[in-house]
Image 1 (cartoon, protein in one colour):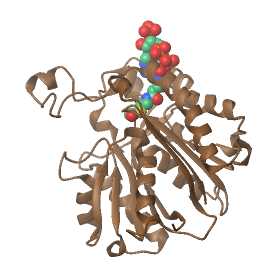
Image 2 (cartoon, rainbow, N blue to C red):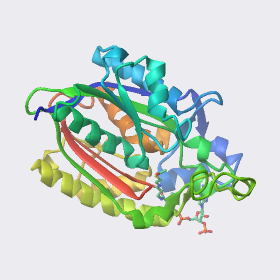
Image 3 (tube, rainbow, N blue to C red):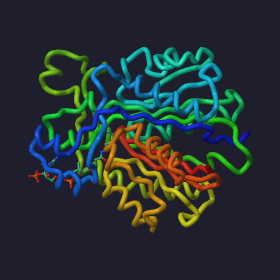
Image 4 (cartoon, rainbow, N blue to C red):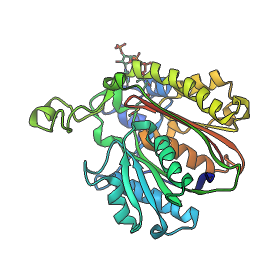
Length: 326
Ligand code: ACO
């Protein structure tokens, strides 16, 4: 089995910024409440003409450039998203066409905020076993399209963006060392978008009852998040045969600063080892981990040979963690 790692990175966020003070004008909230409860200061919001595949396209072009590759060399495209352009065709197929990645197989992956790590695990196995030589894995979401901007419980939390990586063979000793993926379907109703599928097809009633927006039980998701950030981290370190002290950079899902801080305390991690950008982007679901990872790599915070631990949680409920040598 060949070692597989990240050979190219790219990201994209839409231009428009929605600040906490903008939100103060829309719902009854305050910058102080949002910052103290979540750590979020602003988020980027897609333009009306932009859909998830457009954000993914920009991130993908940047990743191809960084890998020194052209789209027609791609073997596989996986887009992790809960806000696809359409139910079908998949966003990955729309992107495959936009990029001109004619040889690539393409599919979407639905694991909410854990989707990017699920995508890395899936794509890396295709390459490890020799079925493909490379893959483009993207986490992209336009959560603003499924956010109710009259609900202060959720509208302050979410933003739009895309992060992309290209996977390929890397030298021995580098690349992915372990994965830990998991699901707790019993908690599915804690974080859900109820209508528009085969259970509750779209109707006037589903629109009137706001069933096309994210529903979240914030407190219960918070408890789940703190728990699995801990257990998934322990598990993925054990599988990689590493201790927490041997991790150089920790890249957590950017949902809430307090969830990140509880993981930092538990792992006894100093701030310089933790990537935090939730203040700028808010929770971008599948794009959250790749936006943090790519930003840290581009800023030179992640260096060759660093041991990187990514961990995320989200709707499903799901979680995903990975250790990688950069
Ligand atoms: N501004 C002002 N007040 C608010 C706001 C707001 N934006 N939102 C809620 N409040 C109020 C509530 O109504 C509540 O008032 P009440 O006590 O009178 O009912 C009060 O603030 C406190 O609410 P809590 O639920 O106790 O606040 P908490 O400290 O739990 O923070 C939060 C809420 C930020 C949502 C937190 O629970 C959280 O981060 N949960 C996890 C969210 C998460 O990680 N989601 C992942 C989504 S991933 C995906 O797949 C999309």
